[in-house]
Image (cartoon, rainbow, N blue to C red; front, side):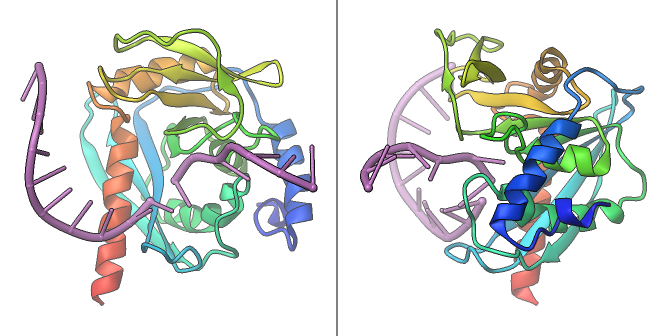
Length: 228
DNA sequence: GCGACAG
DNA sequence: ATCTTGTCGC
């Protein structure tokens, strides 16, 4: 694990690390047989952006879809939220949860952007490269770029998210009458494959199941922490 | 310089 | 991200 890609001493050096991680990111499919899928998400106390971060990595068998117990970890983040640097804030807790998994997944869904980032290094790319695991970014709002063209109303509709002339993600209508999600390459997955996986796991909900499982597990970890 | 800004 | 209740629609 490259320490300067996880804990750079300054934001300036974090920016350098992001350019290196983006360079190491693979944007084509390099996936083995998918038998175990994971979702990664964090939770924190309201109005306490410097307080502890509770991370969860939730597992799900594929194609059985049976959920397995999630791994969780709690860490103090190095700094308050800064747009563009989410990876450095949340990765330490997520990596700790990952380490305690009984079995490593073949595919990882991350709550946040992949390459749809000013330096093409959103948290899904950050985590995917650090762990060298196929990763997909699923974000609920835009960090950079704009949606080109019209997004249809029907579930499965798609429109490209373009930043500085580059397609960095796809806006996907996963559920009727719901806002789209933004699906991007994290690592070792093509954009087309990422979209296919998200649609396969959304099941009529806005967010794919691995993401929902991780969200619930992270919230449960936070409440348990608060009650102790 | 100003505005925008994942979670 | 986060709190909380009610309310609306399929």
